[in-house]
Length: 432
Ligand SMILES: C[S@@+](CC[C@H](N)C(=O)[O-])C[C@H]1O[C@@H](n2cnc3c(N)ncnc32)[C@H](O)[C@@H]1O
Image (tube, helix red, strand yellow):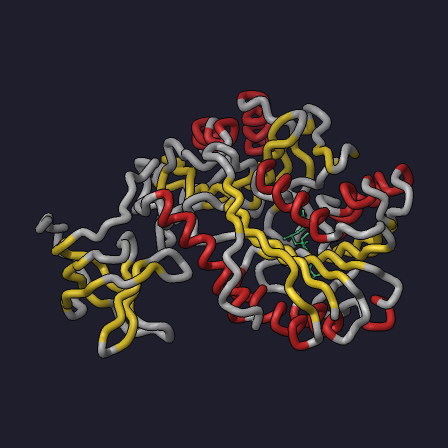
């Protein structure tokens, strides 16, 4: 109590605040006569003296200067970087309150979508150390390479030494990245390393620097050997296709027993446990005699292949060429599986195209699937299962389904973005 922090350089007004709740991004919220204040790292019941930041559309940010009273429901952070690192927002919250918060993000979204306040979905948890995919930021300043994650609300980098969220194989790459990228990045240069643990080893896609000379290519080949990577690819920027630098072992992942080779940096669910929970909920939501199903935003087959294995005739639609190509390569060996490359934001499956499906699964990116949800709302598809990593866009899109006559049958929250403000959810809807 009364422990003071060093004074901040900012000079906003100081105010005593009582935290009433934790908001959608994991910050404590204090409601004041002048509007909301978002105070990171606080829990309900905390009383703090805080310095206010400038007003924004949603409210102001508050920076704790002094703790006046501690609320209950506080937990011991699992990581030495917590508080500074932008990767986690909720390690300071006690385990039961943390799970209740994740559940509330989903039940709140279901209520906003128009399905009432009574939904209190189960939260499937995933273990620490289970995250198999991450994107490290890397910068070189004055000959020193830093590798890790951005600080909260800042472009500064936390040079991550360990991380209880990530698979140990991914954390173990950080020292090799620092060592070898010193010869790859110019001083002041930066890059992003998308790392994915697959069967056969780690896939590393380096985005940046814009050019690689011969010594830089050799340094990357050394990195691949020293870190025992399965594959290392490089792309100068996110719009240019990756080029292979080192392909040391075949890499793959099994969906429904079928081995798929994802493209460099290709999307996968964040953890194997999260994927299993999502696939279980999708299959559970479609517990009817298998017919034709459209798997929209299919990636490289996370849901398509288990659906095909359980007897569904699957039409997989995806907008990313390399991801769909990975699925299309195995399609000839999977009875009933067809694939289509299509931008579902600009060209959603229309009502007439949807008529042949007895079910639709959709798993859009964070932006959601407003156009596709609108088309589904006026379709005759009896069953829709929606997977979402963003409760806000889910609520908007599910509201369209509700307006089109769909009832919510089941909902599940999946906590595969451990200690972050993100939560994944699956909702099964039936028409009529
Ligand atoms: C959340 S991921 C889900 C992928 C897959 N269902 C899975 O579980 O692995 C969203 C997918 O939507 C794709 N996507 C994003 N925007 C799209 C668009 N406009 N049209 C079609 N697919 C899109 C991405 O490439 C990505 O594969």
